[in-house]
Image (cartoon, rainbow, N blue to C red; front, side, top):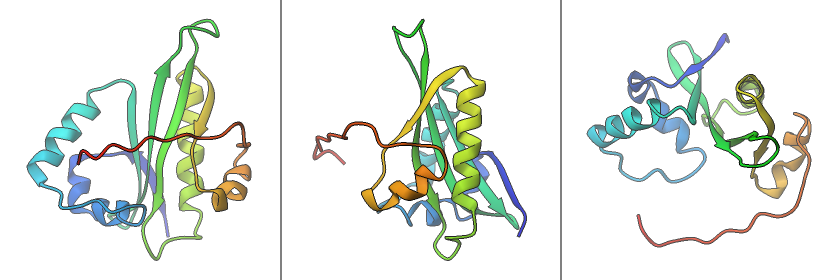
Length: 146
C-alpha cells in the first residue's frame, strides 16, 4: 500500500471520495453538479484546504483544514481540522494519522499558532498520540435545515 496525500480534486468524486466520507456520517444523495459547484467555491477559498489519501487510484481517506484569522495573538491564525475519515475497510492502517500529520504541518506552515479539532470521546487517545490534548468542552446547536 502506497498512500499519497494531496489536495482534493473534482476527479476524486469518481474515485470513492463520497464512499469514504460516508464512513464518517450520512452524506445523503449528492448531486454531481452541485458537488462540482461546491468544490469550485471551496477550492478557490484560501481558508479552506481539503486533502485526500489516495491508494491505487482510489480515495481511502480525507481531512479538511480550515484556517481562522484571529484578532488577538498578534493577528494569529488557528487551524481547524475537520472530517478526518478513513474509508471502511482501511481503518487501522495509519491513513488517518498521515492525514492528521499533513494537515497539522500545513497549518503550521501557514502560520497558525495552534491546531484544534473536535472528536468523539472514544477517539481522544488516538488524537493524543498525535500531540493533541483535551481542553475545555464542545458545545453544539443543531439547525433543522438540510
